[in-house]
Image 1 (cartoon, helix red, strand yellow):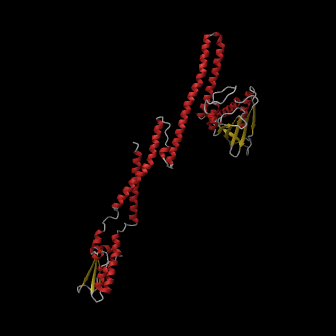
Image 2 (cartoon, one colour):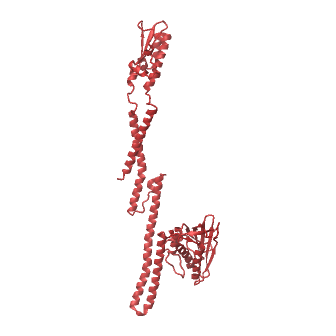
Image 3 (tube, rainbow, N blue to C red):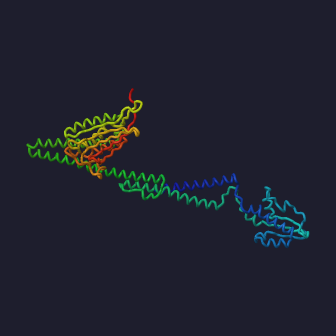
Length: 459
């Protein structure tokens, strides 16, 4: 079943090459005539040449000189020359019969009726010498075939060549396709470790590109499945802890009525925590389901202003300073302003999560700085959010964007580890990018790049 494509390609190429071969042969026969057998060339040029040489030698040297000359000829040519002398030799030959004109259209038919070149010459002693060059054996060897008949050697060589070439080409094309098909079967059976890179070899064509794309797809699927499994495990763990505390609080309340108020407070606190976790998970799901594709025009200054206002309100409780500097320019050219396109709510949550993460890792008196600049040459905004907290090891920076991965938290609490993950996916869903790194002065720096469009303002 897997070889159906191979046989289709093989038969298709054989039929194609055979048709091309017969077509080329037909065109050659139609416009150029069949190839001339070497026998015809011999009869046109070689045989008359031998006869002419013998006539010249006999004319000037006689029969003895002629015998000496033809002794050096090839054996076949010596056997074809017949020499006759005597009184019965006619002194005046019939030229039309004795030397057919090879330039005449009917010369070959005349030669077939009398397969010999003849000439009568007069020797030096006045004797008549009759020279006959018999070519009957040459005429008998001329192949007899129709104008459109393809020579058997050409058929055999062409057939073998077409079969070999078609077989190699069909194998070359179908082998990687079968391997790719095997790869999809492996993936469908759950073997996400299967890769095609080593099996394709050194091919540098579209099929090799397809195999490399398959490997990239398999790698992404493997990461997605691993992330899904890890997310399910993390969610289960996050849900299990507050639920266990709620069950413990219910048990304490049942044991002692005096502990009911404390137990209810704990149950309420854990319920709020569960509600926040579900909200974060729903936001993450909205980002992954394409909520950013709901297009709206967004003013970055206004959006960041709301985030900064909320951050300053929250920072008052811990004494953290929030410093904002927006360097974006609204009027760009002919009344056009730079605006973002996408979901305002998702972008607000992204910025808010990054700023809250900075506040969470900042102590009293430290500064959280938020800056925004307009890179007009590349039509994009560059937003930087930095803090003066403890920072984090460089090897763990990339892991901060994974769900349920937390940095070192302060008194504000550790959160769920979903904030930066939501921020990264929301930013990327809007065509941007987000990076995180340690500052030389201490603390973390989050850099967000967002492309914008120029939109005409209303007159």
